[in-house]
Length: 460
Image (cartoon, rainbow, N blue to C red; front, side, top):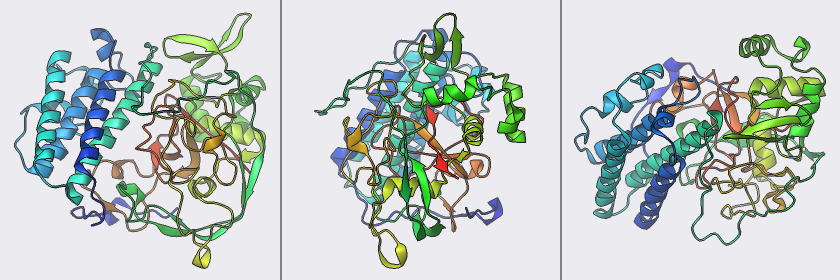
């Protein structure tokens, strides 16, 4: 994928597409809904759990709450409305690029009551200002920015609780939802096989200006050539991955790259970190505060990119590229325009209609994955299942900027991570439905094994 060195990355004021203006009522509803969910996923914890142990992959939950308030104040109050800071010390406590990760356990944080007061004050000020002015492209952009940022932190708090072995948050009740996730057979069934997808001479990878919101790393759409490929109909299951573990996959260096083998030895793993062998009970996986029998037909998660790559080597398969994954999710047979371009990419695997519980496992409505054969209404046009929701899916690609990348006002969102992280697609059961779409690029270091990520494979 094309990349640019940091010196080539330009910066100029964000100029949103003139057609993207949201209704004030929608922004109001999203701001309040995001805050309610943030508080819900952080609820029910002791003061000690609100701080928790120092781990490289988590934040103190109390700090994360203050950071959410600070980010909203910074962009929807200070920046957008040119107002003075509401808390003079907030930058010293909650600016994630000024407060080093380890320091978040060392500084004296306001207690939960004061943190809640800060959250409430910022939201109240922002809503008051929002109601006093006509909606604009700028207000749409900055209010959506803080909503999506908060959605991401609510997701992170959810899987941090799983990593730390805390009790699960309450499932999210989606207002107005009439199709709750189907219960079905809890064991599920396999969903094997590949689909064959023709190549594209010039697939448009990236966002187009008519989208309601785009992160800087999605800009802008540019043609890429993709050869014909075959991709799995479903993600790799726990049962399939267990076969790799049982075959000695974690003990045989030949399955791992040099970097991955060093990582594996450093982590001292002989199976996925969230697995254990129970006497007379077989494999178990940790789900929040408890252990459950290995769900054979659920997608394997949480799993790192290194582990996904090793499994692919063992099976003689490979991870899909970002473009391959997106073509399988966002296009349809015969859906071609001039010069092989898709005239309009699907926002979701099933089309452009909103996500529902019958189509995708999103929004924390279940607090776990579903079997890989569940939710046929969410299939892509090619027959791939669960490309939106259930688990994030690792791709083969490193996270690099697209050609002509330009920093958005939130300069630290993408640029510091280019080249080091890997691209994930599709969202997970933890992800908010309003946030995810087929073009969204998530990114994490290849050694992260705490996020609800799995993978699907392609034939070599």
